[in-house]
Length: 165
Image 1 (cartoon, rainbow, N blue to C red):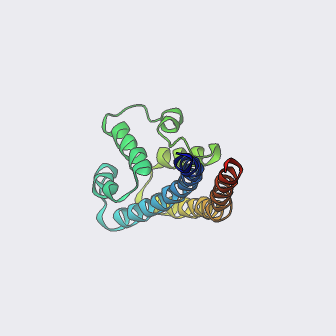
Image 2 (cartoon, rainbow, N blue to C red):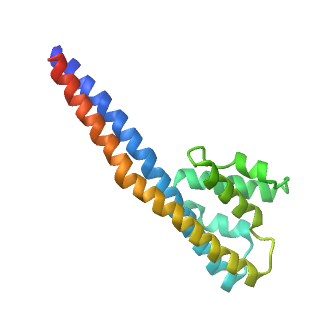
Image 3 (cartoon, helix red, strand yellow):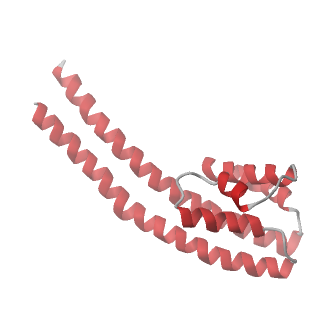
């Protein structure tokens, strides 16, 4: 019975560490998806001249759950011709984004489709560079902070098991 308790305590600490690690990883994947979506937009605007709704419908299945939710919420806003304000766009953003990231992404969606194709392409290229900085910072955080948290909770789990033993 004591062995099961010790294993349970260790698994709890391990689960907390893995949960924290996965939240950092999901942020990285979110930004990878955002850059990929911008690249798809760039290609579609340059060659096909498709509407944003059809581009979202075509590519939304390729993205993670968090980014897909943002895309589909944005598509619903433009499909229903709702008020596309910065406040409405901030409300559909993923909760784990930092405030400056959320405002930059909502600004991106607010500006999307409001310009001619050449100006839109230039704005997309600029936004991709901004989003790449977000990806770089989330990749660094994943490599440094998330791995430290994971190792820390594994060590805490081992220490708890030793102390209980």
